[in-house]
Length: 313
Image (cartoon, rainbow, N blue to C red; front, side):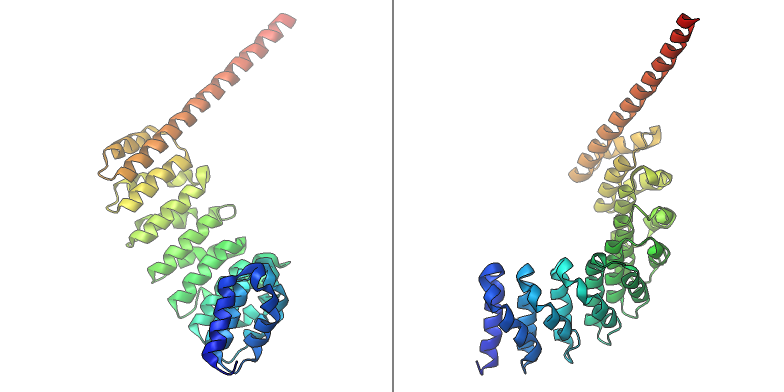
């Protein structure tokens, strides 16, 4: 159609149809996103392809070409659509590495997010991890936060020092994203536990909550953070107190001090905190009982062995 608004509306209509119903239009959408003279139409076509899932796979080369569009909105939309394709969009990683250095903030942000997803589907995620570590030093806080979250999804151990350092970023969104990312990487991120523990004293409540939640995800590996976590039970922010109550159950240290502090939270003015404290108390009590049963069983087994040796003598 010669009218731009009509072409735009058609692409959006195909996006709403989604999936198999719109699959016959994939070649036309691919042609539109890379050849249409209007950037708004191109963007609409790119976004539509992102909504079609596996049916849009034939259009991946066209979407990669759109990463080099002179229009930043089209480049942003292309990065986002390629990310939505999951493994089918992995061939775009090399082009996204270039976009991670784009002069436009939005493109760098979207490319960073996409690298965190698609980097897991290539033979080596090292190049994506390296590019994202560079973005942790970006001049824009939105890009730094996106890079931190993306690194959490990649889970590359060598990035732990950079994420730990980002817990000191001047921007609270970056600090929060870094704390969340380290929790996502808990299998390899135990060296960051001391830095996450320090973040429990952050001036921003969202950062404190993120640090608490992440430490809880480490489970027993975060035992060294038990005392600071119990201190968080007295935080002025409800979400931090609730997260601390949950985390203490996950860390699994049923010491008298922990049990006493959780018992105090049974009188918290917030119902969510009270329920979280009760669940963790029950969980820790069960763990303690199971540990005692195991110890008793081992003791009895040792005694049985001694009796057996006596009988043999």
